[in-house]
Image 1 (spheres, helix red, strand yellow):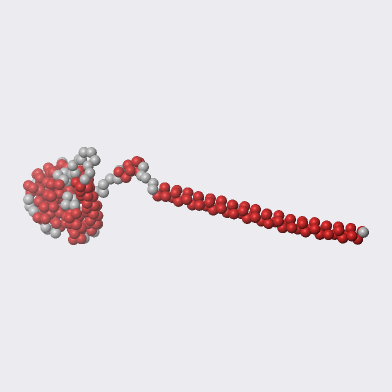
Image 2: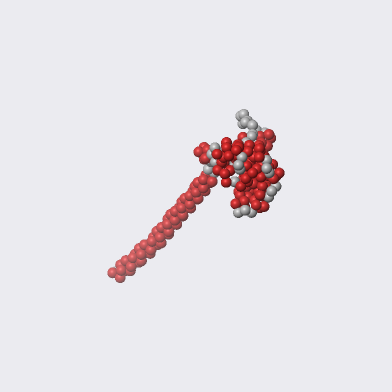
Length: 249
C-alpha cells in the first residue's frame, strides 16, 4: 500500500513539475512579445523625433536664406557716395521727375544713367593709371591713358589739363591750348587750367593773354603767385610791371 502511495505521489510530482515548466514557457513567450512591442514603439518614436528635427532645421535654414533688408540696411546702401565727379554731373543733368514714373522712357533714363556712371568709373581708372605714368615721366603712356579717360568722359577736366601739360612738353602748342581752353569752359574756376594757359601764352610770346590768365589764376588761388615766381615758362613776362604787380600781391 505504501508502495502504491509512493508511486502516486511521484506521478503527481511529475505532473506538477511539467505544469510548472509549461507555464514558464508560456510566460517567457508573453514577456518576449511585450519586449518586442516596447522596442518597436521606442524606435518608432525615435524615428518620428528625428524626422521632426530634420524638418525643423530645414525650415530654419530656409528662413535664414530669405532674409529681407530692413529699412536701416537700405538707408546704409543709399548713403554710398557716387564714385566720381563725372557721376555727379550725370545725375544733376537729369530733369527732376514728379511721382513715380514708369514705362519705357523711365527705363531708358535709368539705363542711360547706369551707362554714364559705369563710363565715369572706367574713366577714373584710366586717369589714375595715366597719373602713375606721368609721375614716372613716361609721357607717351600717360598721354594714351588720358585720352582713353577722355574718350569715356569728355568732360573730365583733370584729364584735359594734364594732357595739355604733356602737349606743352611735346611742343604741340595748338593741341595744348585747345585742351586747356576746353577745361576752362567746362569749369571756369579751374585754377590749374588758367595758370597753364598763362604759361602757354608766355612761351608763345603772347604777353597780354598770358597776363590775363595769370591774373585770373591768382584771383582763384593766391598761392599761384608762388608758382609764378619760380616758373621758367614765364620768363618772357619777367621785368614787366604788370607781371610784378600780379606776383607781388
